[in-house]
Image (cartoon, rainbow, N blue to C red; front, side, top):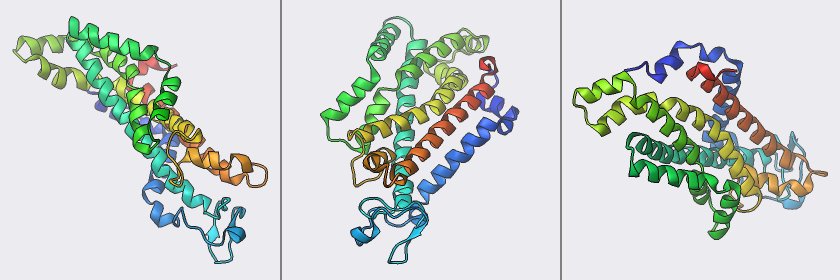
Length: 289
């Protein structure tokens, strides 16, 4: 069998790449804050005296002695608390949507690449048809037909993002199926499904890992866009998209309400993209620029 992609990644000095270090640091910090949100922030829906606590600037303390690192919004809710609890929703939706896309794309691409004939032609035709549909329009259509929720956003993003992965896996499986180690396994009497699962798919994961790493940032951005338009996660549940939407009309007198989640969103998306580029270069040196 060819050298496994995990061994190729381990052999390289991955952490010497500044893109990898930056991406991993930002994503790990965001994940840590999201997981530890109840420990580092107050209840994001906590409201006291709205008139006295609304639109407090960052680094201020209200009349109850509560410190607000990033200030408060129009309802006197702590922006920092809503930011870290919103990270749970935004990061969770992005990661789960990518996992769903990878699962579907891996299954469809592997089946289409390994079993030629009607099965492969049908699956490729389905993939090409789905690729021809404009994703943003489809996202808006599906999100507007049902009651918006985090589960719906995950399903919509996952079911509209698997086609590129399926195409990548199909191409990789077709190439690997003609390699000597696969032909040797077939000659030894190993059956088709086992050849696919044990010998081909482990060596076809490189483009899948890269596409998943790059897709996380895209999924988080799409979730934020849907929530910003009111078609994603609905208030009072915080997500970075609806936090930005809630502060868009107070950019002059209270810019921190929209700026904080906006900066967090940009940092996480850039970190995911840079990490994906670093992973691509390490796992597939031929793609280096």
